[in-house]
Length: 161
Image 1 (cartoon, rainbow, N blue to C red):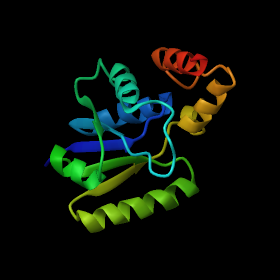
Image 2: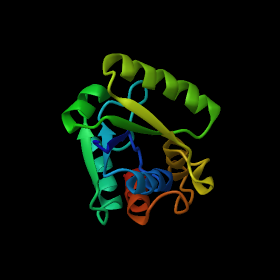
Image 3: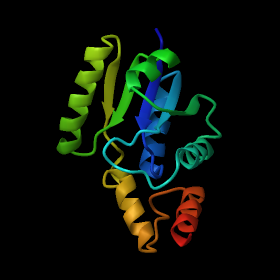
Image 4: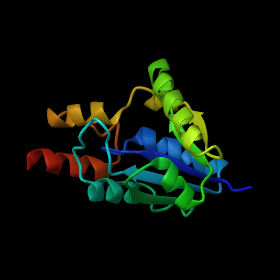
């Protein structure tokens, strides 16, 4: 059986919660593809796609079973191209689950062979989100508990620019 899972998101920026999710997924699947979306939907991204891909690649450089790929377009098309039949999504709260169920159902309607698997975050990261990290960094707060050092440095430089 194909055990390739796609973990999509904007990763703006990638947090320790995202890293934890990928590390846990790497124990369950043969290959994890961190799919960095170029299309943020209704929100705008703070970091460019290239910056987000670079930060994610740096985060997983020691993990041979993890690939980081930027993509645009529909997730179902990307998953098909990658020969993945699973999507990994993190769910922190009931409100996340409602939205994620809707996405999973829509993806399954477009590509019936694509299943979505939900993981809850580790307790250490259950409250961490990229938007909260951006907000703290914007006000020069300490984000070192929420992101890797290379991400912290990039965020600090970007807010000083």
